[in-house]
Image 1 (cartoon, helix red, strand yellow):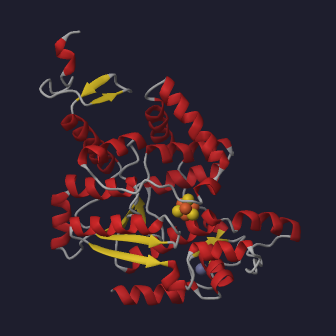
Image 2 (image 1 turned 90 degrees about the horizontal axis):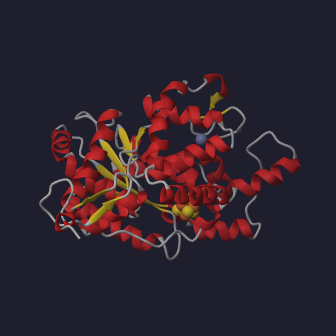
Image 3 (image 1 turned 30 degrees about the vertical axis):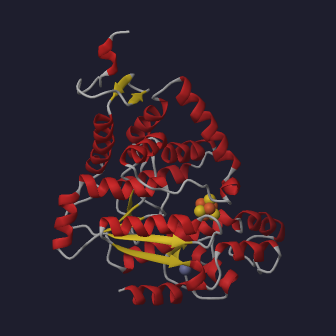
Length: 358
Ligand code: SF4
Ligand code: ZN
């Protein structure tokens, strides 16, 4: 075998450590890390995600994506972050502790250690501490029929039965509450950007899921959020949206980053459809490396063309907290869940929490 093959095809100096299937290159560790960081830098710049006037709230669960998000941002944008700090706008990390036995405790420790390592403020919102019950207890109560599901929609009994099956799944409750709590805390501390660790696989899966379901509204909304302001919500940014999941794992391996590997026990319930799409994409990527990048390229070219502002006629304000909600709903979903499950007012609880951290 030709001895030169053992050296990095980019720098020609170091030993090969990583095979880049999509380009056919064999690269060293330093060139691999540089490529990953450069991808994130380009994504941030292309979509104008950050500037020195921003205050960044980082959603960090302690899983691989959010750990890499925090590490890379502090590595490639150290100067920008210093400028933000000088303006009195230091970044803040937020973790939601849903109360999931055997899962969240470990990742919470990882998130705490990371905040210490990066020397940034870490806010932890615990469902159990703030509302009175963690997700496990809520799920047990729902399964035992102890929660009066009621209705948040103008529907008949049969439709309500079907809607409740979806509405009260663990991931439905968890997803709605986590998204809203993250937004409200970010807003409450004056953050202008909420950074999440969504990666390329997540983005492509969601795109295909919406496409296969013919959900044009969601596709249009995703396009609008990518390009425009987020209205009353804190603008979400996804700096890792051009990184493959496997590259994120590899980046952590090579930078010796700690992350939680155990999947959430409820993740099996997250959706069989998404799981099927993951399977199709994995097989396509294996047989035709680069497929995910190509779909993503198509998305980035195509989404701006279909971007439409959210139609205001379909929106009204939640009578409980004042946030925008679909006109079909009586209340916004977080207010509905918190009232039905905990018998509390969402706005009161989150308001008190924000007062306590400011
Ligand atoms: Fe929440 Fe479901 Fe994700 Fe678990 S898998 S953290 S329950 S959204
Ligand atoms: Zn509300």
